Length: 432
Image (cartoon, helix red, strand yellow):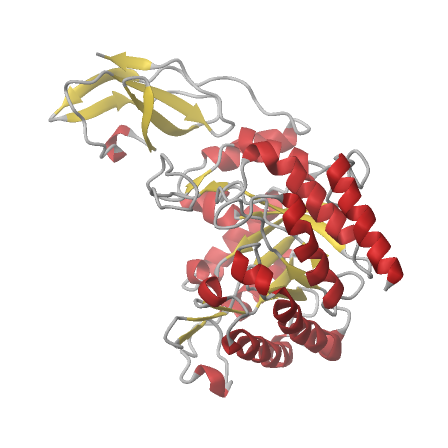
């Protein structure tokens, strides 16, 4: 106990002093794994899975984290993405099998898979303060045994580990219930140990500066309690979301946040692996009190590589590996916009240097039928999107003029800038 106190105290001191707890660089600024959500891939056939796996391998991805395979809504109704026979779920659509499809494709493609378990909607309201959390954790333990029995013998090379699906953060309800969170996590950890102790458990929490005390110093003790009171094993993986894409963490504070996570891992009584989950998207947000500010995006959108590379360069000072949310959702060429994928290939082939050629100016900017229209810009790799300015201020983001549904008013000046996958911007085309 005294040693643990000293370790926690020294970890806190390191964060106070801003001292890095690891080497100057622990990994390269590249992602080697990706998350995927079951709803997104539930209807993929084997051909689509094979293409996605080939695209993942082409950029060096060797790990897939299936975020969850069961989800309970606020009324207690379950959606399950594998043919479970557990009585907790009731009737399950036996034709949907995300686990089997993912493992089959990943076994053939040489990718290791972490299977996520269950999420429940009331987690975001009550955290572990209600009995529902403990119940869901017990269901997750039963899921582990069932899933292992159903799939591991057929896919021993692909089925690598487990993902603890509830996303832990530092809002007051989670801080207040951190010991209960640790107990529920331990239920899943104990099941993993009993079933196959070689299989690691990965968890991916995040730090929020909204709806919480926005201080790493005030939050570090929570992570220390969680890691010290859970039944974590050597080799389990603490893989925090950097929360830049979701905007829970402000860019100016990202290094301090990673110092906090590294200090928490240093205080853990067992040797954990510290990975980073660097988000490659921007979450669309409306103005809501206590939430991050409203965003320009009207739907979740891919991040340009300049931002993602900065995120990964920061994480690389502290973490031994980097994964992302989510290559498949945002960077895969199967999404239809290949600019991000092609730019990422160029980054890898250049030895991790971002290309710097800007797109050409969008041509023939004009009004037609009360809409703003322009001709597509040329780029050496590909235009990712266009930024529309109104009176010199960002107004909307679209992939083409055909997608521009912004409300155009004749009393304003407008300009359009082409942006490529690496974040290079064209000179603005202007219309007054």
